[in-house]
Image (cartoon, rainbow, N blue to C red; front, side, top):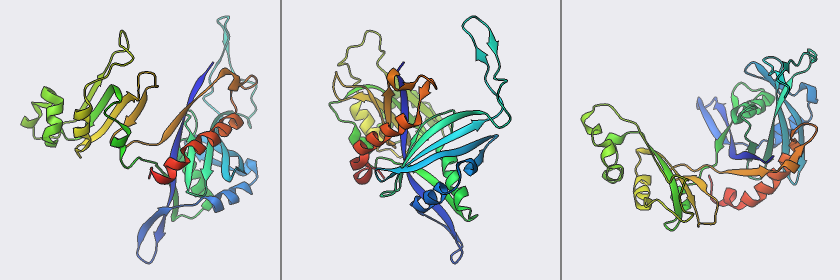
Length: 302
């Protein structure tokens, strides 16, 4: 059974208290020294708290001039039940006090540009939880590691006039003060907002319904989206588009498009023993995906 996994890209930053100026300095941070320090810690001691759970840096190694990391979120209570197709269920009552369930996250770090690539797993660690581990390793109360998503500085360039727009979702933070072009684009939906003293939030969605639609159908909204993209009151313009009728549909945010990738792992990628995709399989794919993105990372995204 195929499984789609998302990978997000971030730039690594650190903030540190400047005693002379009495301010917090923020700068791009190279994790090489932190990772070298973490690598020297025994695996069983590379543990930290995440909410009510524990997390552990299970493995860390260098490959192709990148750092590969395997994090595990460990759960020792709140276990799921074990079910059987015969209609019965049971419990995982054979686990010892020192055992638990783990949810994995694979991480790839490039020291040449301080970019970190993280597999998304909603059941495991968030990017901020991973950054917290690096902060803990440094063990300096005035030093904090954090990640910022890589964002396209000219996201409107990702949408071309000849693209087939299949859907769009627009969020406007303050529709009353939106530009006239934005108001004209939305039409009568916002006509009553000017009578209110408060800011009025609007989320506008439009899409071609899949049933009965043609592969080359498009929404005639390019000019309207282009106008709204220049309005500072518009906080999101998420567009579903494809380059041509045979291309796959892609989603871009014309206001703040973050760099990410999806990969569909096949049934052959799933380990029969774990019934899951192993870290080694995931991180090997991350190395390949990262190589295809390196030009965008170094020259386009900030």
